[in-house]
Image (cartoon, rainbow over all chains, first blue to last red; front, side):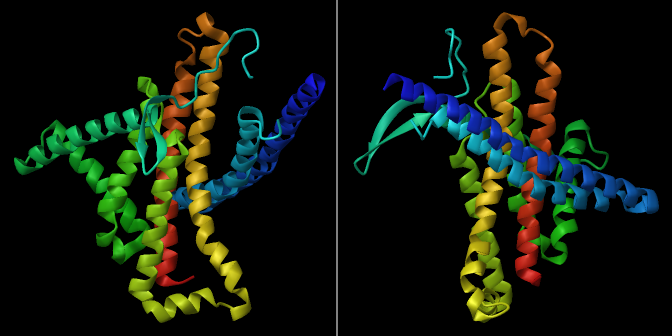
Length: 83
Length: 235
């Protein structure tokens, strides 16, 4: 019985680590968004503030999926629903 | 649990005293206390600002200048997103921005960040949800509202319904998770390194509390206004 609990705890930790891997996608896509914004500023330096707003909006949207992964990890470790 | 070797991570919301309401036991928590403090700070600032503007001079003094800059910036920010509809939204979103910003940065002063509690962010997101739908009905009439639920054909009604609810989930979870991650990283540094964490966490505070906090306050208001604008104009 005791060993089962340890097994579940360890597996939750592994699952939390895997869930945080969800942050790879948003990281890459935020990089793409920033690159596209720099290109846009290079082409049209007058529209800096609008480009910045648009970039922040897009990055905030992509960030959400990464944050869901983070939340799953936090819940797995702190709330421990599987125990 | 997490604490192996007697080290405690201190980022939980703590209950201060319980009370009973409709047969449920509810708690006054650290979030309420932090919210009260944030509210006091905001009220003090607003009363002082009101007094300064009432006695406004032609050549503004320092404080009047700051207040005018803040109000002007927030008004322009609202106008940049919703355009001619901005008079009905700038009051709420200016206040919401100031509230979220002070809440996010209050971690600097040792408070348990109020926006690191899902209750606060869910409440803010529900206000946004109400604003989106009320304004969609107000500007597009009830028929337009019902028609928007049926695009492109009536079969898509459940999907559109989910699309109505998803802004609440994503807005509230984004604000909550961003603040919670900052709180957990800072708690880990202070809890696990203990006496070693003396001066060098200051840049981390600047990043997690001030930078992330400002960006998220900005993003919350920007996304809310964008959703409202889409609901009014139709996308």
